[in-house]
Image (cartoon, rainbow, N blue to C red; front, top):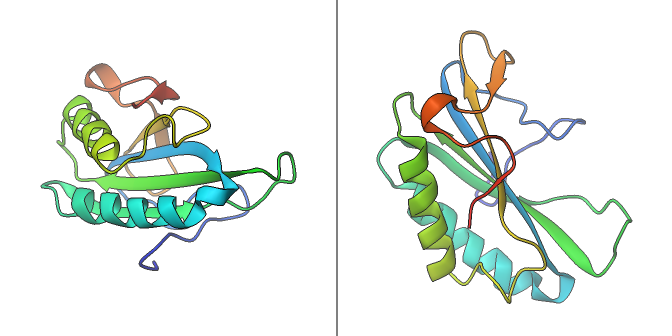
Length: 142
């Protein structure tokens, strides 16, 4: 894992998945012209969130250009959480920290969306959603 991002496979999933725990993926779009600003803010955000209790890993990446709209960038954040971390509390804290870092309107072209996966057993046998205390996949994580 690099300091700025994580390696993704051909299908955009991380190459290494936790055996147990939760993965939170956040994605959003920004103007291409804001790349430096966003990169600096995401470095700060993942550094702060990565030091929180129960956060095993925090990273971000600029997603590859799919050619659909050359004026925007799609960014992806990934947080790997230890088993037992309360998901709603983590997402609330993440949203607050993101807003404090300037990662909110009008800087963003789209809302911050999140997908939460709970991993049980062998890597690759993830269950989408985080159960009764977590959001459904693709919730907005303001």
